Length: 125
Image (cartoon, rainbow, N blue to C red):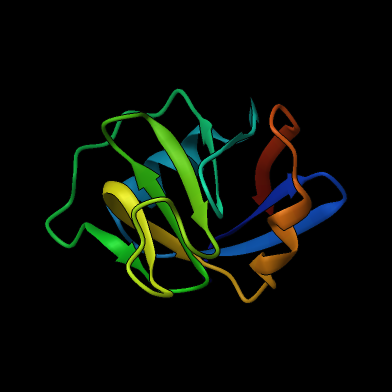
């Protein structure tokens, strides 16, 4: 059975389907995670205590709905639109990141999330 987790930000519950990467396994094993939101353009990110190396399929331009881990910053990032370095409408992150899950949640709703909001990531059964 595929593992899922729930990212709670504000009154939103984002259900994430984890892939089978090493990063996803490390995040799963560290749950629950509590953190606070940081913002960068149309990207929400938050620091976690997980350390994971950059994987060979890491990328800096992601697809809408992909949830990533930023190795250099030890953070989960959720891009949902343009960042300060995006070209046209792409979701371009500041650095290569590991994709560890996907969601069908309408991430555009995160536009109203504010800096410092509480974040909870927990296993979803």
